[in-house]
Length: 250
Image (cartoon, rainbow, N blue to C red; front, side, top):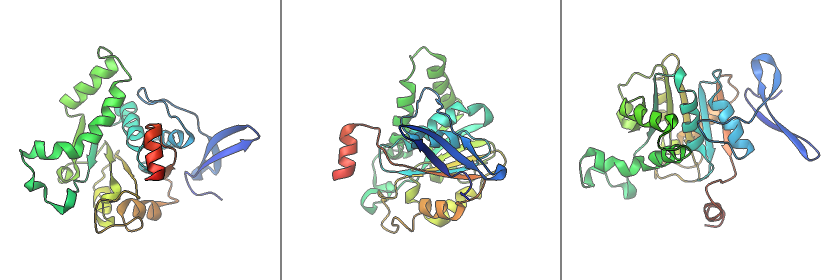
């Protein structure tokens, strides 16, 4: 039998349907294409991702894939779509200094030091905001959520000591975490919290980790087959033709 939440593309000549295995019911369920806060999935992997991200049965999701496949964008769009079920949305990523130089060497205050590391998360948020006009309720709602700290973008180190109950918690660049760090993060999850780890195991910045020993690979290996866990590997780059070409050739 398939493992829990395993995804399938069923083909019949030129036609195909998407489905996922629900272990508790021993049934293969049809996966429909859903939009999430203005974002429409462009391929099967993105459809599978949104299905898992918005499924209340699944409280732990990992998304892997090369740059430009839409991992973080899918996670953020899904979080905004189901925001009513959560107290807050956290977007966090580890700070991995370039050339092993401590962040303290950088100029500016703490916020100025950290902004370059957090900018990719703001970029994904901007992509979603640009789906709407500046006067639309959806656009205004995002700004209000940031202002009211319902949507928080922060380094992972700042999560320590926070209560993680009823939170949609997205951890970006999880390939730069150790297995112990991933365990530490997940064990802080309270009731009603959903955790999402995204990353590219081919782009690891830490000199002490590789494609097999990093926390994202460890997570998907150890949790595979559990009802509350889903993993999707995204293959097709959707950022641009140039980005896809660079990913393949460079």
